[in-house]
Amino acid sequence: MSYNIFLAGVGGQGLVLLSNIIGNACAKADKKAVTGEQHGLSQRSGTVSIHLRIGEDAYSPLIPYGNADLLVSLEAIEALRYIEYLKPDGIIVMNKNIMRPNVETWDLIFKKKQKYLVLDDITQRLKEITNKIAIIDAIQLAKEAGNPLTENVVFLGAISTLKILPIEEKYIRESIAETVPQKALEQNMRAFDLGKKSAYDSLCKLTECKM
Image (cartoon, rainbow, N blue to C red; front, side):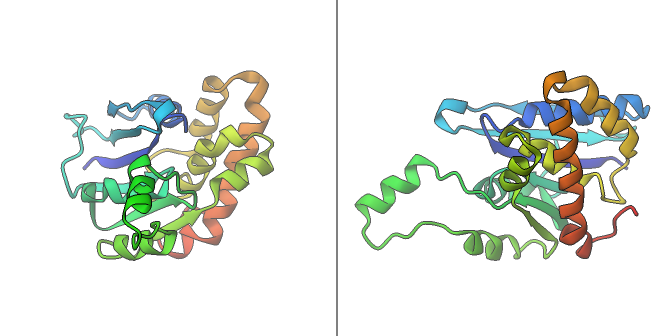
């Protein structure tokens, strides 16, 4: 059986780099991986989604609806946008950060009773599909790592703890070292470790993790 990861976020968050790191790690581990990408416009906060399938029976790059084992959302609202891909009781690892689309602000101005969607609203809707929802303050952790642009690697560190993820950590670390700019390598490795620590405090209370 393939292991299916759906990556979501908005342009400029480094989703393609995240996918490349995971794909390269799969190659190192001699694991078959196929991906399908959809790019938005970063300057307009356009949505970006990536289907990532790992396993010998992963023939199509696209994950069928209801078949993703893991939904990784670097922006909270995007988790709602793509929730139909997650299998019932699947795992969601979601950013605390909300980057509001222009249409939401438009509605707030012209519909006086309209309210901004908040993190609790998003979480409650997601719980209709699964209770395995881990929220990570990735931007804060990236800042602690010394580079706000490393929030994608924070997520990589978090999901690396999952026992069901079929890639050993050593291959992921090797892939990070080969993929990110060398001048930012130390910061990315620190972001990876902070993501792992965060997962043990949250994600690993919801599902089985590697020790």
